[in-house]
Image (cartoon, rainbow, N blue to C red; front, side):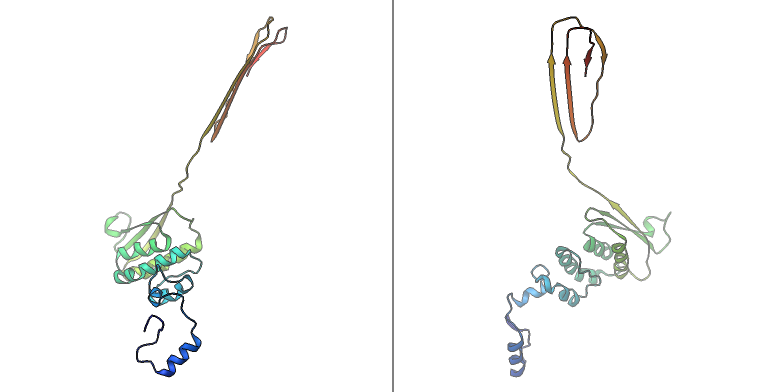
Amino acid sequence: MTMNSLLPPNASKHERDIEAVISPPLSFPNRDIWNPEKCPEHLLPHLAWALSVDNWDSTWPVERKRQVIKDSIYIHRKKGTRDAVERVVSAIRGDDTKVTEWFEDKDNLSPGDFTVDYISTGTPVDGSELNKLVPAINSAKNVRSNLTKITITSRVEASEKHAALSRQAMQMRAGPWIISSMVSSSNNGMACISRQGIQIKSGPLPLVLE
């Protein structure tokens, strides 16, 4: 194999001639095909197959696809451990994951049982995605362990902006007057607007303060 050919060094002239006819020039080095960060997006499914990625979804964002491929070798090396289970969930969801084994919660778990807790900070988890997580966890855990529960904690982070506006005015006219009532009101919310005014008129009409 060279920079411009996938054929082995002992390939025959006939094989190289066929390759030259049917193969368009590559626009990237061959070595990038095996690099999850540099592999062209349309070749990622083939790279995932070559590295034995157990769980794959063509609808995932490209960043998640690359992360799943990068974690595949590590997960295969650590299969059967809690670290592999946490890694496979984090690779698929991109969230913080924690595995609790039976000896860490003897009051609620039987020997061999374990639970998975993770905090969802990205896209919401629907039923179809949850059904994909269970096979992924089962493929990474050891055979004797039994998944009993998955707990999902959704965390929403958003910035708040507050605006306040105040306007005051006073208008006076000479003449007799009396105060008959006083009304005060305010609205509370993301934006707060307060308006006050005093109006005084002469004559028998009452004075209203709003």
